[in-house]
Image (cartoon, rainbow over all chains, first blue to last red; front, side, top):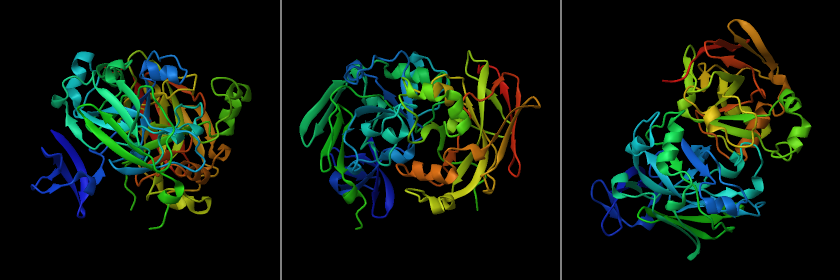
Length: 254
Length: 215
């Protein structure tokens, strides 16, 4: 099943995807997906992201692949839903998307083995983990000013049950900018796969329902400008749409 | 009315005091991998699993025997705070907490230190107290009754108001979030079995103990 969260007519609704692709409220009302206000499909707990978790991307950034997962954390301020706008600050010269498979945790887990790890996965969604490289500094890199900006991590639209994604380690990832494909890869190329990441994190910390792991991105980065429409899609999961806006639009008084 | 306990996300910052900058040294900061002193606040996140109430026991991850105890003060945010101006930045602060930012010793600040800083129990916190004047607040750390560190918030590079300005320039702090004002570089290390006490006049004290490996 595909589940989402929307704001509609003054209330927050848990919704599902109807067979024709429309959004179904619990009471049976059907809405067009472009007409609703999308919220992230889960209220985020601890949000982890992985740096350099695809060998080709590590090479693209001129880094050798890490020996232990390069994990960093994000706050809830940076998470926004499907069809939101993300701000490109006026002084940025290189802002790029990152299409990622997001793993949503559904049960509490600590000290799990790889064999047990997938038992705590509730499902999957898609993240676009934007980075503004102008703000990179070499302290706890990638630093929060690059990766934890307000609204810079779109997530959604759907949370797809784990049972409906039998092999999450063989999914195509695609990014399109204004309809043109710019990034392609497959989750088969992850350096640390999902069970390994869960084993690693739970070796020192408890994962809880609502925690999210963004599993990294393959090569194919490109600068995005105000007005660009970015689609990040993971095969069999969903396609997440986001629009880049400039400061004037973002801070405009309506 | 201030909530007694922290409910949001906890953010921290390193290298925010002159003593720490002197200790790490200009040469180190200029060389690889840092290639320059930090410009923006050098931040990290302590997720919810790290929080422990006063009086608690912290079990270190398997294979570790020592932990750095970074005594600090957390600013508890009382309302959504974004793009704050220095003049009224402290109006967003509903209260403060005494905090012990625990870290497994790590020599380098280059990469995010998730295992080192985010293990279960890595953030003992006292209950929320009213905001007091922090300009000259003295923080004292004791292990088993012996004073191992005293530091003054007068030594901060960015004082609480400036830290709020520079953090909220790019990210919104929500009600219940906490911004720790900084920890000492290579803070004193406590061994398993230690009783730790952190105190500050007018704010009270935070007590906890360090136990051996989890499981």
